Image (cartoon, rainbow, N blue to C red):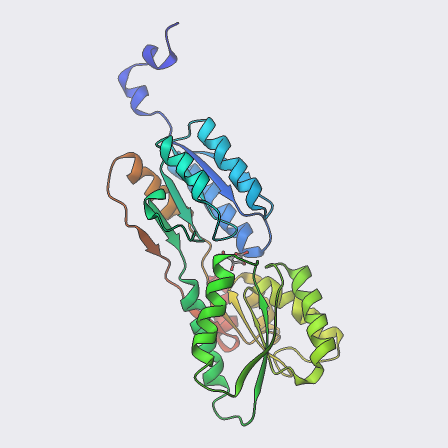
Length: 308
Ligand code: AHR
């Protein structure tokens, strides 16, 4: 049989759409929803055919999706790995099938970096440091211990590991800063609230600071703090990460002290990288997102400029 491609004129062949398989973590947070939206709209704008798969925060689903993309012979595979380890086998399968892989948002801990072309996304350790530096500055004129409770992201995920590390790196310079409780809230509002309730039950008014690895958990925790009869951002200083619109609303309402920016708008740079890979152009091994930090004092002014 004569293939469709053979029947098409040369120009039509040249216009063959690039097919990108993307495996997303899930829809656990406001950040993730904005990230998905950015990827879908950027693919559309770039004329790239996107096969999108939602893993519902399960690594096994991501591995299945990647295997399906390999079987479908997509041109490029991109994914945001829910956790950092356990990817070598499936990445080797993609390499054997000669399908280039792009990591977006989260890194893998594979020793063999030839298993992916590039990793684009935030420097999570630096985000943790920014949170720590802000707190040290805020508390510099106070006396006595600073008791911190920490809501960690998904266990084993790069942002949970690195945000913890960066924050601890900064606060350890002063022994007054103590993390008295630290537990995962899985990056969701519901778990953030639930774990904060447990922290409050166990430590009560001893808690001076909440450090949440994302805004959603902080927003859930704010509810728990209010229900416990305390004033968020006053009785307990609250620091979180992402700088999504929900965090700005909380800051404007005086309930969140600061949010460190983590941009989910990775779609356009992903599509550029995909096109470059397909054109055989060199692509940087690490593409770092540039980000700021927003204390509550600037929230109202910055809010209209926010894109996510
Ligand atoms: O990997 C980025 C993190 O994942 C965001 O900070 C969090 O909100 C999301 O779920």
